[in-house]
Image 1 (tube, rainbow, N blue to C red):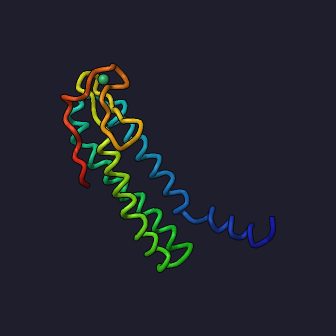
Image 2: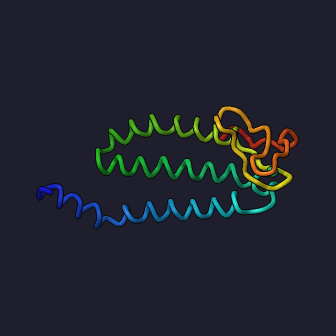
Image 3: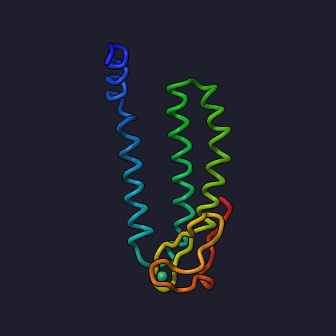
Length: 138
Ligand SMILES: [Zn+2]
């Protein structure tokens, strides 16, 4: 390792944002797991899930943009926003469209391909046709 690489590595490890972001991301993952994977009551999951997808999308866009601006400047950060916002909106809409909550076992069910809603519950095998869809728009 040359001196410049060592100095850069030391700078990154001393910056609190490089610790804060993974800790926040891990905390959001744990909360999402307990709310939507381990939790019960499909109706309340249906109500909270779109807000969670929105929050995760905003967090992702903000984090990537902040890191891009810090490392490459505001112009590159602006271009990153131009790419990230529509891409994140599209992926978040696909996640909402391809997710249902089973009324029989309260499981979160996602289709394998993301463009279609799941037909049967992967946990209990129940048909999901009667289960309400989540809103597609963000
Ligand atoms: Zn089920």
